[in-house]
Image (cartoon, rainbow, N blue to C red; front, side, top):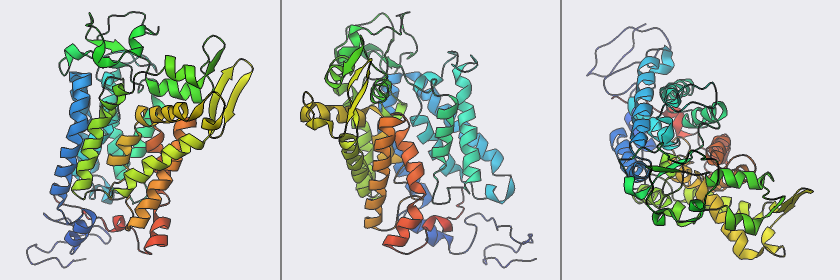
Length: 427
């Protein structure tokens, strides 16, 4: 069957149902659809500004985790690009894969992973070198992009199932434990730790990172605050037979400036909350994301964590949980708010709120829809972070809430999701 093509293109013969591929677009009018999807920008401008915003948390992560963070980013980009090159040649779905989109998702996935994966340390599963996870992660991301029709169906962000699949397969390997000392910023080896008995807590864990004395090794090993928090909220953390929330915050949590400025083990993109916020504010300033999504997502998660039942006391006899624990004797608002602040800062919630949740294939049409979507993601993330995992609660919440986006669009605008019209842009 012969298709009619624009004047600048020769006619071609193709089987029925197979999309036309050209040097610019895959069908007439797709440029207008792309402009709507990318906020009036070309795809190149859209991704260039996102890369600029991501540079702030990326540079902070490279500074705190050294050259191995660079290797993680390069390996993920290579894996995603190579996987995309393969899957672009398979079936009609491959025609919808865009290298620029795959590379951006590869960058986001690298920002969700710890820097020590770029090492030959043995995996907790099978004992194989950890670096083997990196190219595999890029290929897995490309597969999910292919399965989800290029940039996604508007309900599932391809990055999310790829990341959660890695979390299920390698839960302990993806837990960060290392951070450089301040004398080795950018150039140090984050896995070079002198303390052989790394599993024993030390007094260094209670000092601000920037005040730690010079060390004989390039990095410190620390139990991440994310692990400490989930152990406590699940009722698994009791020191000497008992633990209460005040002693937990005093003895187990690091100084809060280690999260805001940097100095705690974390995924590369969450090394410095300040850097993440700067990048996110740039995206809002340029009109690339709707400000309602990150704002109401974080606020909703904050309120949920403040109201939800958390342990006030953990003893050998059981766990004493209370709703709105701030009203309990011996707790008070100061302790409760401090606990929630640690929850917000210790995970990937803020990074997800700015760089993943407002993706164009997920973002509802109207401001009211963005508000509802942000609230929904925040509520789910709050409960998941308290009772599932601090590290991947926010991506899991976006994955679940994305299923409700068509309903949100019908309630607020009664239009079909724009992602259904996503074109295949030329590279």
